[in-house]
Amino acid sequence: MDDLDYAHSLADDAVALTMQRYRALDLVVETKADLTPVTDADSRVEGALRERIASERGGEAVAGEEFGVEEAEVRWWLDPIDGTKQYARGLPIWATLIALERSGQIAVGVVSAPALGHRWWAERGAGAFAAGLIGGLAAGAIVGSAVANSRPAYVVGPGPGYVVYPGYAAALPGPSCYWTRMPVYDAYGNVVGWRGRPVAVCP
Image (cartoon, rainbow, N blue to C red; front, side, top):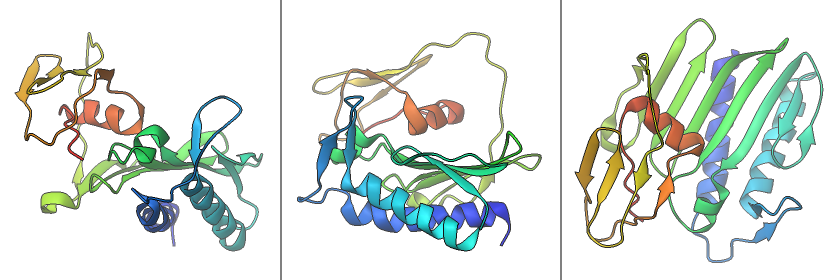
C-alpha cells in the first residue's frame, strides 16, 4: 500500500471511531491544561492510529494532538478531531487531519469530514483532490487561484438570516439551521474557503 492509500485507510479507521461516538449521550468531555476540550473520541482515535502505525509501519514516528510528538525522518501528523468543540456539541463542522512528513517535507495529507460527507487529499507533485458522499460527488481535482485581498467569512443570525461571505450572501437553507457569529476557521472552514462556498450548519 502506498503512502496516500495508507493515509486514506487511517482516515477510514478514524471515521468508524469518530462517528461511533458522534452525538453519543455518554460522550466524555474534559478540559486539557491549555483549557481546550478533549473527548474520549479524540483519545481513542489517536491511540488506535498510533497503535496501527507502530504495528504496520515500523520506524515511522507519530506527532499527535493528544499524545505528543515523536522525532524521525518519516513522521505521521495526526489531529484526531479538529473542531472538538463542535464535535462535542453535536455540530458537523469537524474533521480528522492526517499528514505524512518525509525529511521535513509533507508528502501526503488527508482531511476527512465524515459528518459532512466530504474528504480532501493531496500528494506532493500529484495535485489536490476532493470527494463527497452526500449527493454522490465524485472525486475531482481542486483548482487554485490567486487572491489579492481576503477577509474572514462570518455566519450571522439569529433567526432567518444570511451567510455573509466576501461578495456572497445566501438565505438560510432551512428553519432547523444553526447560526452563530464566528469566523470560518479551522480545517473545514479553510477548505470551504478554497472551494469558495459558504457554510450553513444544519444539525
